[in-house]
Image (cartoon, rainbow, N blue to C red; front, side):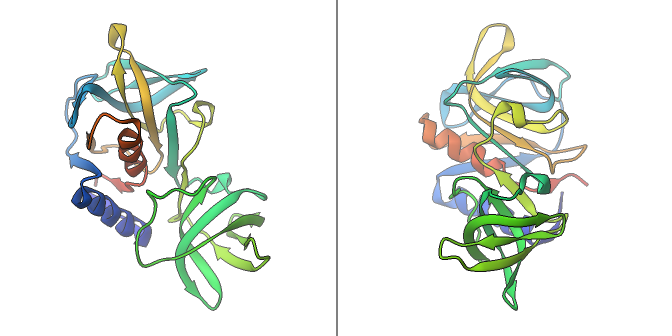
Length: 235
């Protein structure tokens, strides 16, 4: 597996920390034939489905698994949906963001930008963290306006990881890698409690097996939130 950029290294470290603390375990393995639904370690009541998003039908997602089987993943208003990747277009004027990166001369080079509500799962060490509102957004960066009125220049690049932790199914784009955890329904469907859509995993992506601390919704969300910040691709 190749890990690209400082953001990637920091977030892989984040996954390791999560495993050590026992909050969530994410196990990476090589690509191979997978069944449509697999068990989630830590809760026998849960199943996992992952694959490539083919289309969105309202609140339902149709994904194609590694074995080639289509699986319909249904969501509700309480389903946690996150998306991540090089989604610089989601950083728009007026958006509330948390920026993490290295600061030099008063400018922050953004390694990670979380759009929307603060997201504790994206908190690797070694970065300056500043929260505020986006102004003057462009392809090269933006101005971060803090609650106290301070204006902080922020630069972005293709290596900047953008995380939208509270997305809606309609925001997900075909071609994204989807990881979902929930309860199996009829005909191979999955009623999802949490879904992570990851845009930075390319062809040949590894399989990610989820292990949760217990069957609680918070543990499931923690697991999928962590997966949404795994910026690895198979080489």
